[in-house]
Image (cartoon, rainbow, N blue to C red; front, top):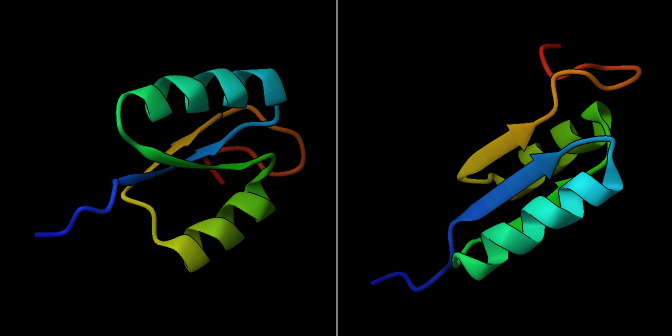
Length: 66
């Protein structure tokens, strides 16, 4: 059986929001990675293959829909 925690990638330009969400998810047994913008998030998603991506829709430069 695989004991690895499910990985969630949180992409948001608000660092405080990312930290709050990451803390809550961590206490619930998830591994969490963070990205501060769209391009960084795409790169991390491609390299880490997270189980779930939570992202902000309204971010500068590249929004969550793009």
